[in-house]
Image (cartoon, rainbow, N blue to C red; front, side, top):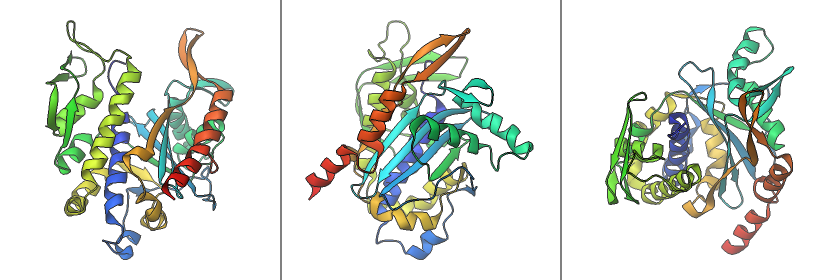
Length: 325
């Protein structure tokens, strides 16, 4: 697909809001407020793990289509409570996994999960995706958040836009998707629509440049945008817009994360800064098998990535902790 999935940018926007809002509220709003706060429709999953006293909290973020049958975006966000490091692992939607007797793309797991719920085999459709991500990564998953609506533009507008230096003229038209991008280069304030266009852009019309590295270039641009957003919006004045921001997010979320969980993690969340937020992709390669395109996970490289970044004793986190002391 030429453009950044609208489900994926919804997940990214939720990560942004999660960091922005909660980084500003510590010591300002009472614990009583958070204890009663709802992040959306509360759903319990039988496949989730109980939080252990390791300092790591893992949250599976899912972006599903309007019918809820496919999760076109799957990200595992891991928060190190000791250092405030937030590591996000993106899992390609075409990742090949074994479901029952057959190999499937992992984005079909939530739809198959719905069928299993009807048969009485699962508690919720997201359970199957949780199981497969745990098998791929070897990591426990403590929470999940599933988003089924694109509130990205509304969130950016609620925050008053984001000042950002657009690197070059971005011009792209796709009548099929109803997508029309036309951004001028230079430092400017991106409102909701312009931010939407920026995060979706990858390839230009004929005669207009795109990212030289394709998806890798786009991922780097996304990271730069997220860091700019967080650095600008970690400000107590945005508490005045908290209700508006939360309304946009929570009306479109299914999750087991509660206000009480927020209170428990608030100390770690307040440590998050743009330089401590890193994004990764599941290691592997694209292959065509029996005429279908799959992403094949590299198990050895995945295990290495998990050990060096996502485990409680990850060296990167140890180095960060030492630098802060």
